[in-house]
Image (cartoon, rainbow, N blue to C red; front, side, top):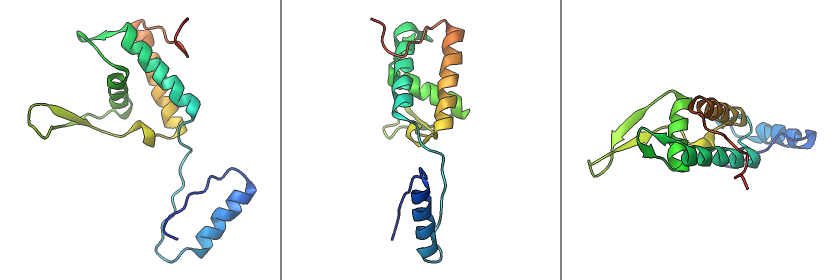
Length: 130
């Protein structure tokens, strides 16, 4: 047994996890994490980022949804770390990937986007308007 993951979704899965912990050799690690984002959260995020990219020019530039994701992740983490790229002609922003966010952290990210959009006068839709 080198690695396993169990979702604690019902009593049987909890017992399975406890059994694996009991049988684990000394020195193994146990990590409990909040659930990761849902498919619905992910869809909503990209709809919001798309609306920002359509409706807002940021410091003279129209950003892509992917660009907005980086801007919002930097805002969520309250950190900005940059290093030169490998060619020395630009910079790379370092930070956490949104795929590593828990459901609650992902909710915080969407709340940040909603607040920012409201400040900027951007209307957010769950899906593209007809």
